[in-house]
Image 1 (tube, rainbow, N blue to C red):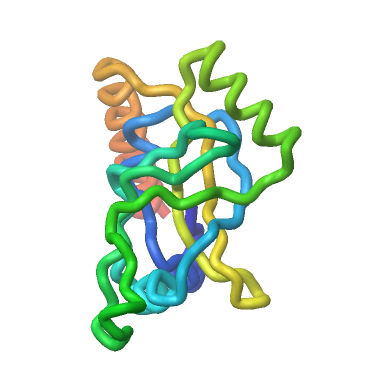
Image 2: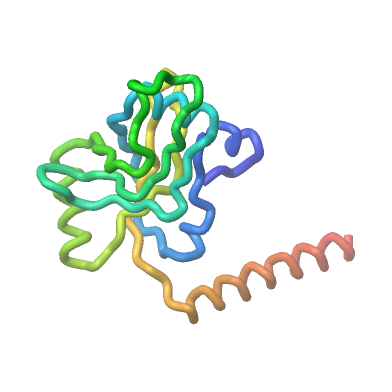
Length: 158
């Protein structure tokens, strides 16, 4: 996740609720198979991954339920399906590890953000996560509010 405003600008799409709804165990960077109009929509910021997830389908891992809006400037015959499944590119060993964790431990593969790397290639930050219960979410809110109050008191004191 972005640490500063400058880091936030490099993300084309962010899943802000992911850290609140899930306990993140591990993150990794994966590639995606995209069409030209999907890359144009991504550069324009017309992508939503808030309800997206990754899962095994056939021979590999796929990004499911991610919405890439249709790009206006692309021709009609070059358009893509907004909700189609997109293949994720990662090493076989990593893929087997993630699929095993999903099947054995009941974990979820959550997309955290999509960004362009230094070479201009679209990458997906994928997290291996477990769902949080309502009690855990309340505890996280309480801890966050306490940190804010503590920082406020320290500023006032000195």
